[in-house]
Length: 272
Image (cartoon, rainbow, N blue to C red; front, side, top):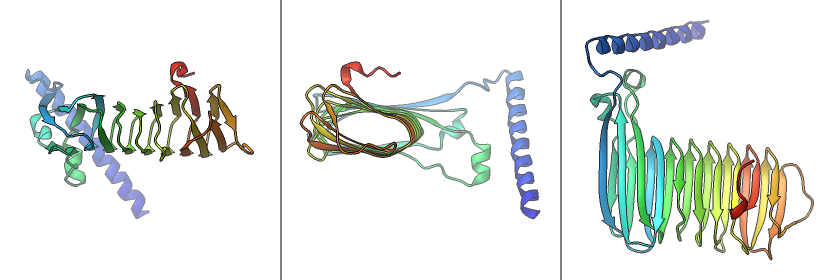
């Protein structure tokens, strides 16, 4: 009974706080203050990276876009927006760079329940143009991710949003995603690709004449192989799938997916 009363009180306080903040906003608007406009902060920086450098993006509350090219220059653009300047002073984003490393780090949200209740959210947008010859790590992003192909290892985890990326020679691991995952595979290294813990559909887009061994486990959805040179391996079950693409080769492991899995050629990857 006491727990029920406490829960009701907390809900009432939260509702009252929402009403107070809404009333305050209307009052400011009536006094010609721009209550609904946002304040923003932009960061634009350029760095030189050596081949094989590590690029990391962590703790971002918003979308992340990473474009890659045959260059040694890294261009960084970060946009932070909030309802007011006070809120903008929280959740800052830092950039740390050397010749072998570029780290984009979002500040953790600090403060207890009441501070988070009274202060609004800070949104981020990160846009990077980086060399293709890098290793890429992205962790803890509350927003969609789109990343171009890199030659090094790729690790993407803890994402609340869809993920679109590409793979060439390095090992890739994508895990803990609340959203769909699309991977364009032009080349694949001997260590292959691993995708696990996905709450959404998975689509793997294979380049022509690419060889791989596919293993899927724990799939809560249909597995569709829409490739001309795929051969099923062993007994197939509803949540299990084994296949060989071409002559077989590097492993592609997919597990723990709450959604469908599609294997398609890159030229015919339009979603149904």
